[in-house]
Image (tube, rainbow, N blue to C red; front, side, top):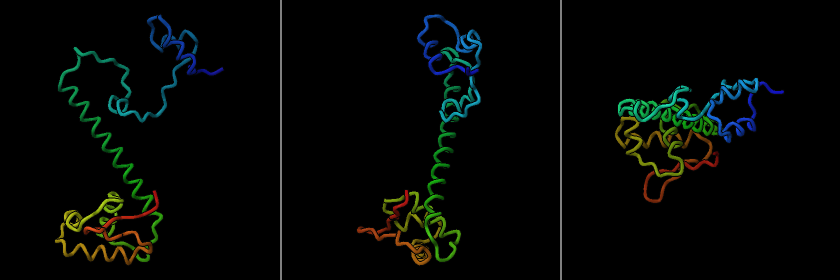
Length: 166
């Protein structure tokens, strides 16, 4: 017999008309709640698993704004880590004939982030903080260093990163 509440027991507690907490219900059954699970719910990350209920009287606009800022920051971190994982996954299936320089890596990362979209030299010039004329050198170097043909000229100018790796 499990020492933790089962899903069925939690369903019974929810359907019960009795006004008791889940912790009290578990104690009655001689069980405990399993609380060590890692959560990916943004509200639990922001509130850091606080067991407190907030009423509208306690919620001030400043408090709500602070919670929203925390939530946005955590969500941005999650998206950034997912994007970095995606970039690294695509880069690890690419075979380079020669190692890439730091600026070539920045250009490649930008192409991967904008996979399937047209990227113009002016966009890359902003990232590299260089005039547009210098950007073409890095695109040419990428094409020669990467064995696959992944940088395609777009029909209306610019380049498209075309890689079958997800």
